[in-house]
Length: 306
Image (cartoon, rainbow, N blue to C red; front, side):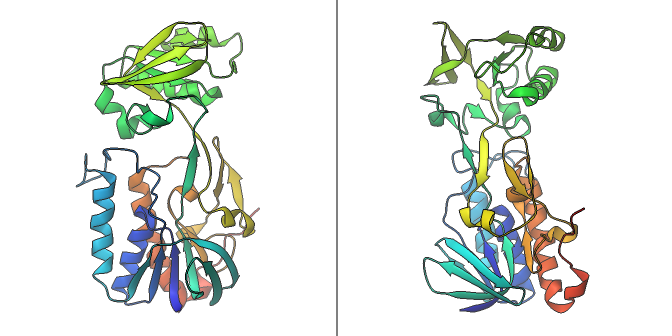
C-alpha cells in the first residue's frame, strides 16, 4: 500500500489531521490500536461544543467525519517500525507493508502510575492528572496531591486557589525536604509525610490508607504519572527530544515539523502536559502542514537544534 501521508495514532490529533488531508483528497492511512490515553475518563471537559461528553463519543464523531472522505483509510493495528526518508518512508505494521511520502506521529504517550494497590482502579475518576480537566467536578470537596517534587507545590497552589479550601499534600517516597512544611503552610495546605500504601474506591472518591496506619478521605487525588512513548519505535527514530517533568517528548518546530525531514508530530507526544483541545489544534496544523509540504517541501524544513 502506498499513501501520501501515514498517520500513526488515531486519537484526537491524528483524526483531526486525517480530516484536513481528506478534504485535500490526499491518500491517507490512519493506524490506531484503539487505546486512547483518556479511555478511563468518563467525560472530557473544557472541550468547546463537547464539554462533558465521553472521550470515546468525541473520537467516534471525529472518526466518522474523517471517514466520510474516500481517500482516508483506517487500519486498526499497530505500526512497529519506521525507516526511509521523505517521499520514501517504509512502515512496518501488523498487516501489509506501507510506503508513505510523509508521516505524522500522533501516537501519544503511556502513563505509568505509581505501584499503589487500588490506584489504577480510580484512574480517570478520582485519581486525576489535571484540575482544568477534572477540578470543577470535585470543587469545594477535600482534595489531595500525591507529591512529586516542585510540581506538587504548583498543583497545591492551583487547587488551593480556585478549587478547594481543603487540600492535602502527601509526600511520596519521602522526597520533600525540611522546608516543605513552611511552603505548605504558606499555601494553606496540609502536608503529610506518610506515603500512601493502598487506595479504596468509594461512591464519591476514595479512602487512602497511609503507612502510619491512618487514612484520608478524598474526592480527588491529583498526581503526575511517569510517561513514555506509546509506540516504542519512536525512541529509535533519532528525533530531537526533550525531557519533561514526567518523561520524554518529541521536539517540534514551526508547523509541528520534527528534526527529521518528512516526519511531523502532533498531540501529547509533543508536549509535557496532555490536554485534549491542544491536541485537536495540533491535528489541524499538522495535517495542513503535511499536505503543503508535499507541494512546497522547502517551506517546511525539519527542526534545527541549537
